[in-house]
Image 1 (cartoon, rainbow, N blue to C red):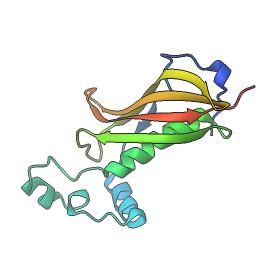
Image 2 (cartoon, rainbow, N blue to C red; image 1 turned 90 degrees about the vertical axis):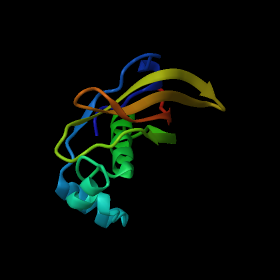
Image 3 (cartoon, rainbow, N blue to C red; image 1 turned 120 degrees about the vertical axis):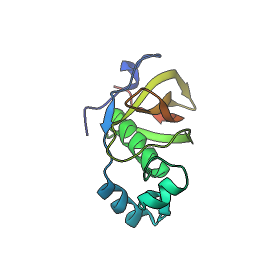
Image 4 (cartoon, helix red, strand yellow; image 1 turned 60 degrees about the vertical axis):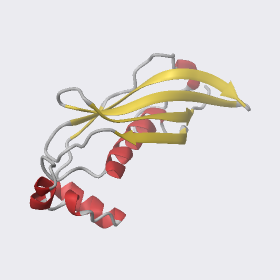
Length: 142
C-alpha cells in the first residue's frame, strides 16, 4: 500500500492516482476460478466472436476489483470504502491497457465521519470510459 491519505489533505476536484492494468487471458482464467464466473464469453474466443464480441471480454466484477484496488491504495491502511456503485458501459478485452481513474467530487463530515465522495471509472486506450461509478470513502484525520 502507498502512503496514508488524510481527510485534511484532500480537496474537491482533486484526481486520484491512476492505476494502470493490462488484463491477460491467464488472469481471466484465474479470476474465473476464484469467482466461479465461467461465462463462455470470458474464455472462448470463438463463442465470443460468434456473438458479435471482438474477443473474450474482461469480467465486469474484475474491473470492479481493479477500481477497488485503486481506491484502497489511495485511501491507505486507515481509510475504508463505505459504498461502491458501478455501471458497466462497454466491454474490455485482454491484452489492451485499461486505466483506473477517479476524482474527488465532494468532501464532508457526517455523523462524526470524514467522508469523501469520488467519481471513478475505467478508461481504455482510446479514452472511452468503459466502467463508471461512485464511491464513498472514509478517511482518517491527522
